[in-house]
Image (tube, rainbow over all chains, first blue to last red; front, side, top):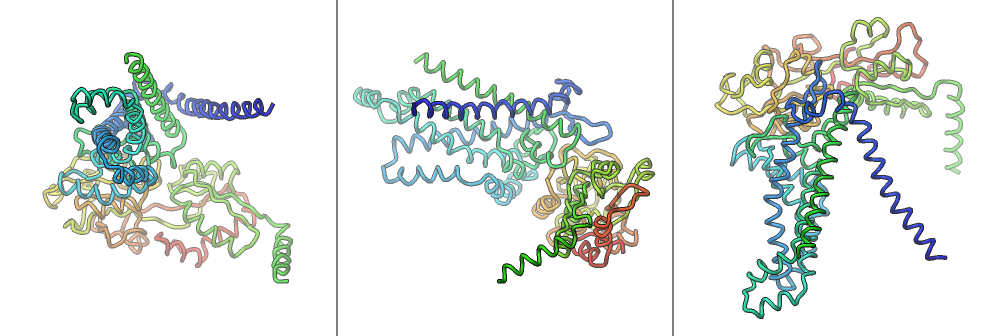
Length: 284
Length: 263
């Protein structure tokens, strides 16, 4: 009897999460679709001019889509190699004393509020980029570097789990056959942990794509199509965050419509990972 | 003993004001709201039991709310359109000047309005074309929808769109910070929050200062308005609040916060 009550309570709790997801989806689409219907999907996605409050308003979000892609890609280029290097070091190479100190330190990175990352990017990194490399300093590069650091805890903790769960027999077998430590890591451990590592990268990508506050502070939010990493840009999230406070009417609808695009991108991203991971598991 | 006394006092205060209006809504412009809110707080401190609810919805929404009676008072940071002015009483409560700011090390002192338009529309991209050093110009503007953005578009740009390369910041303070750090930047903020970290340029020879806005030498200023339906008596609390805002105390407070007083 008690078992059944607890089971029921847990089931209801799980449904509440689903319900929240359903409601969020419903309201974003309800608030945003009318605008997409009015300006047309190609006009919304591929127009490069965003001027929502002009007498003849224009609602093109291509600069933001491109901005999101650049910033996210840049964060991956910086965060993934760094994260995987740290993970391999932690699991396979670091003495126990060092990893006992490093692991909590990495997790601490996840606890720093994003506004603090943004502030550091704005006050330290942006002037550095401006003075050494040129451009306005508030740029795709600045945002990508800081986001690359922000996604480290996600990548490291999940890929570490994956690498640790590789059966010891695999390593021992390879070592017994005379492989060097690096060969074991490169040819045995990483391929065996592949699905977990991919999952960690995609979750990191989702984090980079969704970050708003830090990005608003660091990338300058200009509405151009960036042509260099030193250019300022706007992402889908940062534009919503920047403009929502004052938006009304069609402008507000356009921001919700931006949310729909973001929603679909994240869904596709998650779907792809799930598929990749599943295929990886089957093939092995 | 002491606590009982306080309770008695509170009860007395409530009983006293029971007959009069106790609550009004003031809604509209996001630029005016912070000031109206601040004065509402001061007013409520002096008048226990009265509540003034300031809602920041944008000028158009506030004008509409006042016209329809949803709010007792509407706030606007733009001029009323002809058909709105026919239906609504308006009171200018203060004026707000827009200053064009650059980094303190920038040698430029003055720009013409035409130069400002060419700078912000992207036609001029290098400081040497307006008599400065040979550096790329970094534009810093507000985001669409903000009152400061629309004031700049109306007063200075006359509808010419900003260059897409302009950096956008979410507040006057953020623009000031970016301009203070970037030697090549130019932006615009309320005169009231210009400080030593940036340099305010004179436009067509007129220095942006509170005096020059008051005597109309510096033309880039907008009125902050309170509006309510014509021919309708404001209720006592709303009238008292408007009187407070227009009083010496209210005007002093607005001036302290960086606006230009009208009385």
